[in-house]
Amino acid sequence: AQKVTQAQTEISVVEKEDVTLDCVYETRDTTYYLFWYKQPPSGELVFLIRRNSFDEQNEISGRYSWNFQKSTSSFNFTITASQVVDSAVYFCAGQGNTNAGKSTFGDGTTLTVKP
Amino acid sequence: DAGITQSPRHKVTETGTPVTLRCHQTENHRYMYWYRQDPGHGLRLIHYSYGVKDTDKGEVSDGYSVSRSKTEDFLLTLESATSSQTSVYFCAIRPGLAGLSGANVLTFGAGSRLTVL
Image 1 (cartoon, one colour):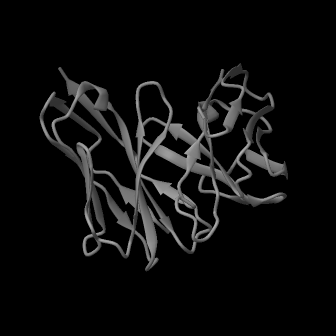
Image 2 (image 1 turned 45 degrees about the vertical axis):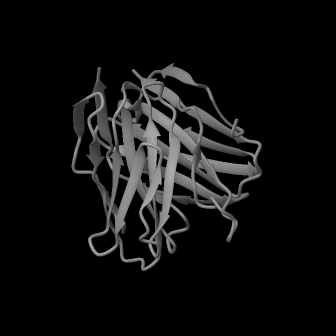
């Protein structure tokens, strides 16, 4: 069975602060995929990034960056210079290659960015 | 637009009544999923489909059934709704084509908010 742990339930920061959202994925699969999805107050779920378990290269996209460490099964997400529009619920998800592609989600981290 | 729609978007019903939620896609994707979202529980998989008439249970399937008679439609049925099934239901699709970039990325519908009184 897979398990995704997002230890932070809620985070509140002031605009322009950096913030890191933590995610740990537990699985017996040797190959798997990790994802981050964003759910803004409007309620839709939006895909942000996918990472393969065999690719530990960090990724940066604008103010967003992701750090994957296979040794600790962590896939952390950092927002640099946060903005009010970043306020949302962020979900980390994992998908093994032996479970028919079912994604397991964490409970989500609610990020509030105050002006 | 991703080509996935859910209906109805909002529904209020009474305990014991049957309810059917519909997910319709125009992407010709193989895989379809039903998740429910509740505070403090993230998204939990109810049922999924890996092809026409091919479905299987997820982690919270009790009280739910599904059907997929066409590639584009995936129906979620609550045979006798209970208050514990008050939730927001999301349908998701993915291509599942090996080697295709994004083959395992989920695209979600807008959600269906169900209230069972």
